[in-house]
Length: 237
Image (cartoon, rainbow, N blue to C red; front, side):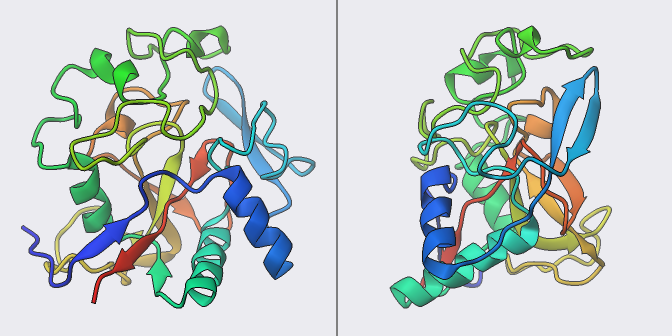
């Protein structure tokens, strides 16, 4: 059980490529210069020629920023903090899940039927089956094989878009295999294997458990992928 010690806000959408581009231009930050991209079956490969500017699939500035590492996401929140005078950061796992569930208790924020996903999320589905994948997707069609412009789908009951699907989102927490010993006040768990941080929410590539509100994925902090992005959070004082 978690009882939040402090109220917080979280981004209504994932950070877009346009917003990330503004950060890079203004700060002269050099993001990751390579990216893991989907090839076929369940195979992903690292491509040194791809980056957030070109993640290997078509994007516009309204799409979520992808191919960003955990360190890139942290750098963005620090820049945003300096720019606004507010203390932006990545959400904790507890904050992220609370925001994603939006008061619901089913496996998915829209209920127990995973095939209703396409009303609310960009996931692996009939549209994604045009890609050479070798696993079953959600049995619906969201019209997007890769990323979609943010807020293309219905918001959850908190008014938040794309908490599930589109891109898997970085959180602040270090890797731990379960919640035994986790903070009960909603803060980030900064003990464990901190060479990895938890990503939440699934993506355009995912179906089933990664898209559950409870789905968790530990990933190395220096890794960037064409299905990974982030949204900022803010403690309200």
